[in-house]
Image (cartoon, rainbow, N blue to C red; front, side, top):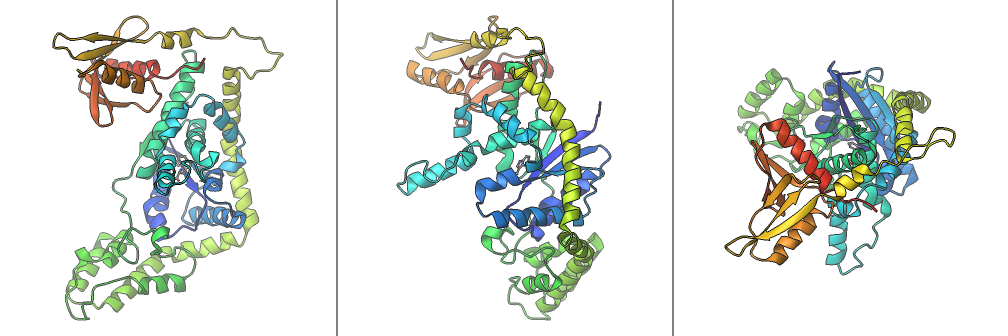
Length: 451
Ligand code: TRP
């Protein structure tokens, strides 16, 4: 048994990493992987890339560049498990097992899918115009990535938090249906690095390919220099005091400088250092910090066979975990050898879930409320008061629709929220453990059961 924290994250292989990706994600991940307590799984999410990109050359190029970037940046592949998603056939297989338990209603609510639908509706198109099943099922594939390796922590950007929550939801559902008391899947948590700065780009907005304001990372010293020369500054002349706190050039400098270097640069700017000179300081700093990695990067890119070997080695390590685990999961769902003894279908749990029930009642003041009772009659929730029976009925319906429950803990109780409104409260519990167990029981009770 390992007590290390398993940290897993994927990088979609559709582009070339720029300086912002490096400072915001790659460098912190490489540093985190050196912690003796960390068991890091980092992979190229190339199946995910296919969802967004149908240009084979771009996919191939990006995989190579991203692999080389992480390695050149100092990722130690003896320490971490570094692999390509598409080298692990267990992942698409697990995706299917999870697809068969994932509620469609859950996926309907995925932000990325919803945004595409909204856009279509706005422009008067068919709601699903141009939307592939790949985009729709994106969160299930991501759930398989995460659950396959029982990750504890998943470092992601804010836009991905919902996907990690969906992975929990789907994993929990699978545990409940097939675990027979055993928790196959660990519940992952999204890890949002608050301290890591998002780098500003040339124009001061967030550095992003979609704004066309990036500084290249490892392409060449000249390209980096050219980009730096295009950083937008104010029009203060050399000799005039500059305001470091309102200069994204300074922010960029700071992201790569020691405290002492940053202090020195700050006072030079205050003393009137010219912007041209300031840009060349920034270039020198970046070049001394990244120059060696850039060289390693080009060596790696020129030896794709070596990169291939490294990734195959990573795939082997990952599959040493995935293959036996998937076998267990296949067994659990009934995909078993005919030779092995058969097992009685474990339907008791499903029945238990089915018998959790809503009981509605009317208060003396005429308002409508309901209770949710577990199979053994224990009160899981008591609703707030609703003006009419119809609203109360809609709320119970929504609670059973299979969406991610918005549960908020409050000391020794919790409440359930729908669209920003508190709709029901739990009883109060003896301690936090009892409260958390009740939240778990509630989620299970509200998971739609398949026939
Ligand atoms: N969807 C993630 C992104 O676009 C990439 C990704 C795929 C991922 N699978 C993952 C991240 C699993 C974390 C865990 O950023």
